[in-house]
Image 1 (cartoon, helix red, strand yellow):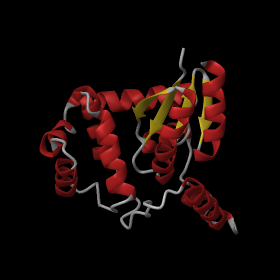
Image 2: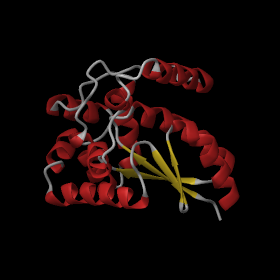
Image 3: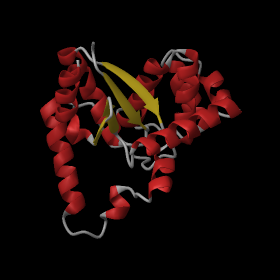
Image 4: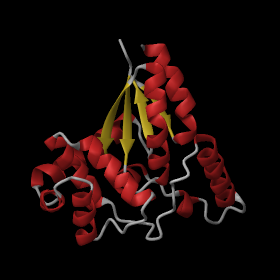
Length: 202
């Protein structure tokens, strides 16, 4: 039976974008399926005491420069030449993540994720601006105005909180996090191990 790769993500992570672009190849090679789980990175950080690399390692000589180097190597290896650092970074992704939950409820999560990641990490849009958000999602073929309204739905808000708490309970402390069965993997640099586990579990 094909393995399932749980992908815990937040649009605010450039590494979530980079990982998402590599996952289709893993799925093709292993026969695994991907289960997209929207979670709020800020909520994960708050629950675990974690911090962004910029905050945690900003004073460590050479650390952030090396992180950028590794990212460029990853981009080159996987030919992800459409990636561009969002000029509005950091972007508050609460609206985007609630919209993802609403899209999942509507059965349109995959096109929503594709649109959200593209707008964030290829087009460089300010996706925490309501008008920009609604317009961008509409241009992607989704109901932008409807999704914007749904971000205030108590059921949507509660589901995002539930997803985030469940991810922390499983052991997640950052994004991107992957689970293959009970095995957890953190970060884009563990995708090779994700693929190996998907093969082992099929």
